[in-house]
Length: 246
Image (cartoon, rainbow, N blue to C red; front, side):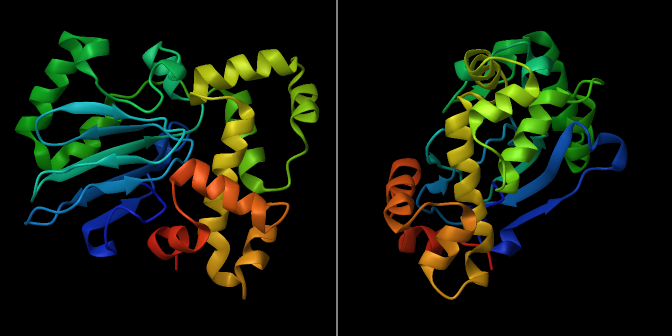
């Protein structure tokens, strides 16, 4: 279900950019069709994002994940998802994201009857699920400071956290509190997760795994081994074989 490509072969998973009017609030729209026969649970890698997902019966939130999670999906099911832009979820839901870290939470548990009414609309208009999900989102754009932080950490050339805090004109402690509220974990963990995603995105362009690790921002091969095992439970070679983007 995520951009790492680990959810399924490309034919089963498709994603697209949202309409221009929604690009400040939505990062991606996606759709996944499960195999018609039972299959093993899928590994979902952390990516620093929160998804709103419709499975045909229930509307739920996925993430944020600090480490790899798994998803067991009924054969033949179709999932429609909206990946929220960084910095959107906290203001929209009114809940600190660290209360949802590693969880899959039904929207009705947060919104009650409002979520149930949306589920009824989705059930009656399943072909328009992505459009209806978009209209469930807030009019307000992302928190600009947190969107900026996510973009800086994603780039791979961000300064160290004390300098990022200085640029945001907050203390490191305040930065951690804000990251917990918006991303579900502190800036250091977010940095590690986004570095892992850079590795997955860029490894195929490098001759060796060490070259790919250095380009992604790892200090050395042992640094990559440690982070890969801690965040995904896999060795780097296993990780790239299963989830590397080609």
